[in-house]
Image 1 (cartoon, rainbow, N blue to C red):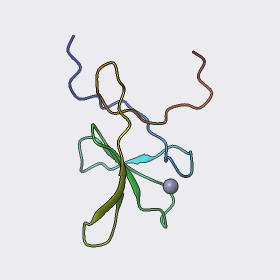
Image 2 (image 1 turned 30 degrees about the vertical axis):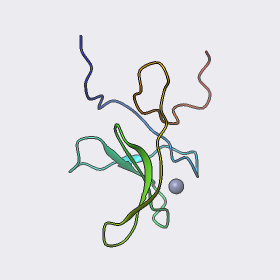
Image 3 (image 1 turned 90 degrees about the vertical axis):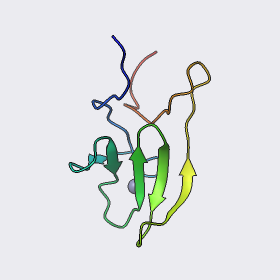
Length: 80
Ligand SMILES: [Zn+2]
């Protein structure tokens, strides 16, 4: 199975470390649940601040060396 666009991801805000809220209108876009936090996560681009007027700043792409796909903060208690 080819998993081009995962929609079951549960990213966490890289500042607050809590689970982000999926934006229903977007296919794979999440935002921080803190209203004052501009942090967003979009797959496969990673984290970024979405400012008023649609300006994007402080983007952080988490790249996995093995396949280059974006990484995100997942469950912090998962064991590897
Ligand atoms: Zn946040």
